[in-house]
Length: 435
Image (cartoon, rainbow, N blue to C red):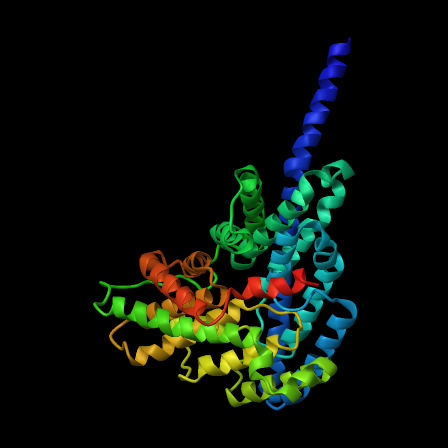
């Protein structure tokens, strides 16, 4: 009579161990996928309303963008410190500095602030993306699940549990944001940890799959920028285009990183002092700059740039050679105040603009080919993670025919970018680790 009881207890203990090892990760991954989809729809709703209103009142951004810039800075600093920027530096800082930073940078409060303030920012036309914030949200959501584990488990191995939860949540967030599961795996390896532990690889991959399934179920099977068909043979000038785009996007992305990391070296001393003493007023001033640029550019620099990038890929958007420069200026103005917002989608739009501009030089090449190379080049230059960049772009455009060209462009641009600045996210992460 004791055997069944013994078996039952053993089965329960095994089930409990399986839950602790897999179940919480899978539950968090499903929640991450759901939140990522809802967040994407919220951002789209906000930006569509911005476009609808400004189509009638073109001058309105000159009023609402500075106001939202000021309010976004105030509410972030007052109620959601740690929610600023893309969120990827916060995740990297937590993964490298252990459990002490997790309760400060990966909380439900910051998750709510990240979503709410970035929604307000997109309502004001700020040049931000949702992909970086989704990574931060996923990491915070998964990290919060540590409370389901006993204290003795949480205290083991110097915070390994918390790091694994945050890592899985961040990778699942990227997978759901782009509908790109392979990119989620590569991002976790290359950008977040720079390593891959066999012990946690299976759990990480299944978390990414679960988040992807949720995104797939709610949004359908789609590619982020649609499918691109390249007809005929590759042109003889492709190799030259890869080199030139790699160098140009590497220089542009490297300068962008340098500007963000060295504000005290290029901004006037009085402006630096004013930014530190009056951050809310500085946020309003940045909002005004963003509004002026956006109005002058016919509204094309507002928002993430997704519509412009997709329009260029599909040949339905005619933007001038000045678009990448104007978009970059608006992107810097959106990031400097410190309100939540990501860099991925605007970087892809800038890269698309560079490829579009270089079509003047390579008129014999198909325009979508140049735009895809520009996108991967600029994204690789900003992140200095070339593998992640070309995997993301391949999955977003279904561009497997260009695998080698995209790889080469990403590698060239990331190396050129290193001549100007260190890896952006890691450099920003050190600011959190030094606090």
